[in-house]
Length: 421
Image 1: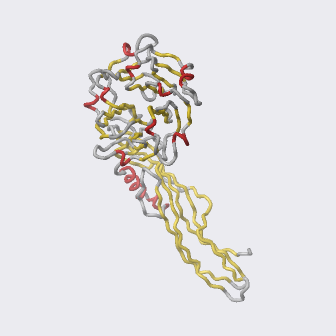
Image 2: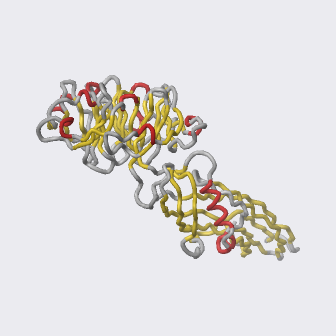
Image 3: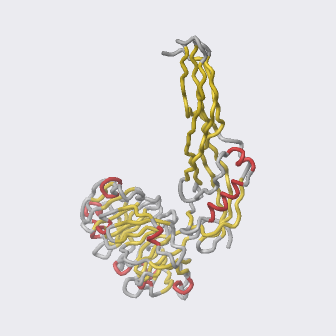
């Protein structure tokens, strides 16, 4: 398959927990369940949603988990995902993402929250990170979604679809309704099983009928009903407990990696002193001899940027392995790095220990004092790379990024006269 932007895919979770992902249906005889990839199973969950970045979020019990898209049928996704929220996540009736990646949640008691994507299980999202933008009554929403511009669309209990800017303060639902515009006639309550706009677009709107499972794609009409004018693209979709659009941004294989240019060397900052001693012989008439000996271990940090927006599948880190081999076999890189450890993970910040040790004989004349200092230079190195990769759904993509590492080298031992107290 050709290179290009990530393709929009439809993720579904059947009532038995089977997870599928595939290109959305394009005509009424298109058999999505038969052709979609089976990614595995999710069990004992209450919410499943996909971030615009292609990550999977799941609520199980009171906890929230996030991780790369499922890619191995025989691997329990929860065992590879990161728990990013403890307690209270079972209190949400609706959870969804805005186009810019903010998480929104409506609680069972009608409060509406919006905030950054959770990343720390020890930091309460609802009470410490999110902003309450809806005070009460929001549990009356039968369905809620956002278009690409961020406008909020809500299906009301009296079978209307309304549109307005989302609240920015703790606004009551009934108050917000007064600011909204009614769209597209009636018949929306039946279409609440799934309702979402095509990612990255303001149109069309996709809906699934909760009674017969018909799936539709179409613009919101100015008059008449949505179903009468939308495309009918299949049936039986109410057999899926959850549906969500996502983009195929999960890398499962690395075809080729290249460094973009010769590293010109790190950018060095001020020296870092690792050992400093003063030898005071000002009150003696005899020479002073001593060994200036030190042994210090410093930590280097390195990571791969993901400006390309793709994420790596759980399991073996083939990208990290391929890039590590490429970097460690590059003469210019090896000249710069003192450490021979080349195991760089693509998923996390790497730590690498570098040891500096030496012994230096010091002789201080009578009536003199000297200061001996051992220092190293700290440098920041960025190596640009280009890689051809295969995504979960089989698309061939080209990604670009950088390998960024802080290093220590250029050990220097310096001896100067000392005149201090």
